[in-house]
Every structure is written in C-alpha cells, then in structure tokens.
Length: 381
Image 1 (cartoon, one colour):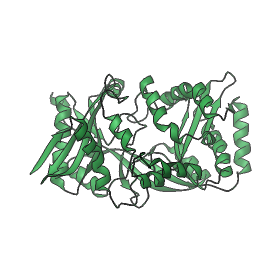
Image 2 (cartoon, one colour):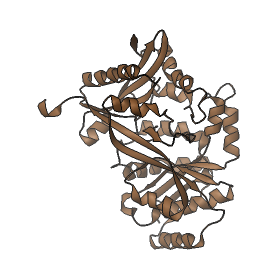
Image 3 (cartoon, helix red, strand yellow):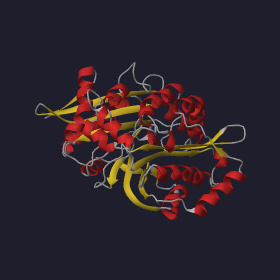
Image 4 (cartoon, one colour):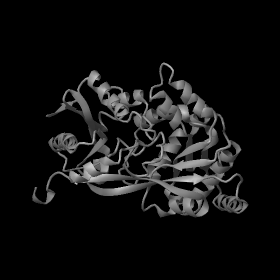
C-alpha cells in the first residue's frame, strides 16, 4: 500500500529535500541542488516566492515504511494572471521506477490543484523560469549543470503513461570554444555596436557592478523573456532572493552588460563558473566543509554555464546577442575556458540556436520537456 503524506512540518520538509540525493546516490550525472536553498524555498516566511506571489504544497509517497517518491504542487498567481489561465505546476517530481507510486503522487498533486480551482497542470516547473525546469528526455549520459536537473530515463515513461503530454521542449548545447577570437566576428560585432551606439560597461568590481546595475538588469530580463513559456515578472523580493542565491558564483569576468549613451542597460549576458563537480563532492551541503570543493571549482575554471542572454525588445534581431557573446568569449579565452554549456533554449528559438550552431563548434547535449495535463473539462464547465 502506498501512503501519501502532505509535507506540513520542518521535519517532513527535510525528508522531502533529502529524498532526491538518496534516490540518485551513485548516479555520476546527478548534481544536487544546495540543500539549504531547497529548504528555504519551500519554507513559509523564508521563501521569497510563497505568499502573495505563489502557494505550494509538497507530498511524500511512503511504501512499506520507506519514502519512495515526492512531488510539489505550485500555483503561480502572477503567471495565471498574466496569461489568463488556471494552471498549477508540478515540481520536484522524483520517485522509484514504479507506476503505482508515480500515480499516487500525481493523483495527490492533481487533486490538490483541482481543489485550488485549477483546470490543468504543467511541469516540471519551479516558481519562475530561473529555477530548474523541464524533465530530461535526452542526454542522460551528460553530467547536469548546477542550474539544471538530472532525471532518470524512466520518469518520461511514467508521466506519459499517466496522461501527461508534451507542451514544449528546451535544448541545451555544449559550445567548444576556440583558443582565439575570430577577427571577422570581432570586427562585425564592433561595427554593430558602433552603429547602435552601444558600449560595454567597464566596471569590474563586483559589489559596485551589482549595486549600480542589478535592478536595470532584471528589468531587461523581465522584458526580454516576458513572452516566453511559463515566465513570470520577477518581484523585488524575488530579485533580491535570486541575487543572494547566486552571489557566490558571480564572476565579473563572465558578465557583459551593454548600455546606450545614457547608461541604460540594453542587453546582458551572464555565465557562471561550472561548479557541478564541486557541488557533487559537497553532496549539496555547504556546511561544515562542503564549501571547500565548491570554492575550489570557482578558482580553476575550464567550463562555464551560459546562464542567460537577454536583449531589450527594441534591440532584438539587430545582432546584439553576438556582441554580448563576443565580449564574453574574449574573457573566456583569457581565463582558459574551453567549453560553455548553454542554459535551456526553447526549441523554436531559432535565432539563438543559429548563433550557437552556425558560428561556433557546438553539439546538442540535452533535451528537456514540459508536460501538461488537463484536469477539468473546461468546455462542459
């Protein structure tokens, strides 16, 4: 018999968070999230998401006295308001390879969503698109980046057996970086920047850079990603939370900010040193000694994770993305970086894909999928 337990205490929340690394123990491709972040994000009063912006409910599945699965349900109020929908999200879905366990978990989160007035559910998705999103459906032999989530191959089969259908896919590329700048691309980027009267911010002090530009950067990201799948506006509380979460891995060498003559941010590119192996060694725990391998991975950087590139709408399709990447590429080369891993790119984002595949030596590394399931027949209600 499978028992579903709603997570309603600190003790159960810790069990919820700790189940995933136990399930993936011995899996070389799995990179855990930071345990402290996962606990905080689901803790009322600590979470920057729960409250006016969103609500959530976590569930555990227990069989024969052992935890065998987990799932979280999320209702993102800002998303539903923005897109005029009644959709819940499922997140942090993990379980053993057992269809009945998966059924019990999805039934629990679906019934919760219906009671909250929702008519459909999609995911895996977090509170916003800067959280881990999408179920891995291809590229199981590759180690995950710190910003993304590994999934066992059987997850796809379980969800599809339970009536979940593809909603959208994301692609991730590995870009094999050259050891010197292509002069033709460099000159072309310079010409475009001059024509648009744009220049790169020269400030290299991290504290001063963040203090002066972080609000303008988030404004650009909200605008640039506003129409993309499952995106939500980032409130001031969420912005500060994300900044605090990623401050440790921010390296100013891997940031390029383009501004106009009035110092308005037009575009931004951010990459992070790849800390996946350091986080693996720390098993997702910063303390007491987990921060040591993570700090080591920040010092000698061979691989970077391309977290995001955002361009203001009035400057899109004008070659600005290539300027950003060209600026960052020079510093990658100077630091000895040999490969860049892209973040999730929507499968129909052909312009960005063309930059990676036609200009640089790249290979498709992973494919992730968001599923959707209708819960209520809206035509007859």
